[in-house]
Image 1: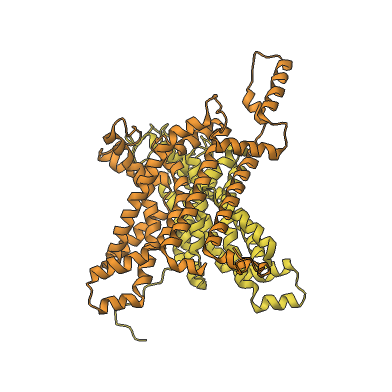
Image 2: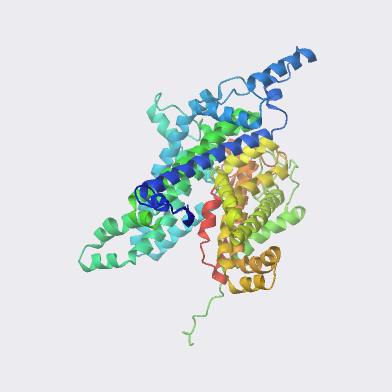
Length: 343
Length: 287
């Protein structure tokens, strides 16, 4: 976000234009502008990839139509082309698609259902699973990294380090399989896969939730741990920590009240990154545990070649990622004044 | 230096060495599966779902094929897909990234904004999208995996390009009339290599995981061809009857992915390239 020096034209208030861009509200405006530009680009790319589909959208929509003569078919085809706006320029089609998407209209699925209704019915299961996993991973990473930081046992620290490293090379479906083997097949504590709506049976819903949420949460925990661990080590070397100790604060107080909050700060940005990988992880985990969310819908739709649904999910997940990353950036600036001044 | 008697220095195990040792058997499996596999990958040799035994070290699968042989034969496909896609991503990302950092200006702005846009798509979601649209052939799979990894590689390589462009030897070459491509291939690339190799190892590791995930979802190698991902998929169906079914391919995936990371870690230590290599592992995206 650099503003060239050439824009230094004094305005009515006597401030130069670049000073306005550098002011707080100016920067916020620029950030919103960038957000908008990325959103437009993301939707445009989704739209363009859809254009590369083999066969036209019309033929996909028409299907084989066995009872029709070629003339009738051609007639139907032409009227459909006009009604779908496919005879218009590509830019018009894109705008039409975006405007409709903004109104929640993503077209029809292969079976003629509304895509938006289908996606809408799945979205809450995904949100529940995603939130549960984030909660578990945040709490776990705080506990584990504080333990690793405070313990004097090298063996314990080494053990945690290697456990975390192993988590980095375990894809979700393999970690999930191990959890299913232990907790579902051997111990029989939890069901291996399935879903019940929370409103139908809260207890069952939570039983089904545990394993998929853990499968998602453990790798996230590993990632958070890495950042927290590095943060704790860096912060503990800072002079203010020494001064805290010199003033005679107990080590517990120093670690939890002074070191941890400062070390945890940069981890906030990681949450944004995880939000991105969360959606990828959800795709796998939901199909592993038959969790009827958007991830499973995506995999099913890919299998059925249900293009409209796939495009809708791609658009929704990427927009969600961009917006979440943006908000996280924003929150970080609010929480850490040093970043504001640097920027 | 005198050492206490009896405390001999242990032979040092470098991460690269450990990684190569872990990777070697799988490379051997991929090259000569017939030599290492006790049975053919499609031969029904015993009753289904046997546990591990002397005859079948990993047991048999749901229709009575030897699981060890399936895992061995799957190495070829899994390693090939991951290495090819990592190779494509590495080549494209490195060339674009280095040029972008070196040339700067409008080229840099445009390519980095493009990178931002591509990074906005969750990894697996984008790969699935591309496979839906362009089909399920192996080359589509390779290119889809490569495409989701290229942007982060480019961003990483750009950082290297930025650092190297102000070096004396680059300036000197420019003054003596070296062209852009000459500088790119003769000066930037060789000097950025150690750091880029670390990135390559992370890419290869991520590619193994993504490829396995795709075939787990049924979008990679199609049955009856074996892949670690699709063996694990069948493992879920029989988890109550044969709990150890998926252990072999699961370990194979983790060992190969881990071996690549170790090799990279070794290179990093050897060349002291501490420059933010964490950046790439962060942005390539976990699966």
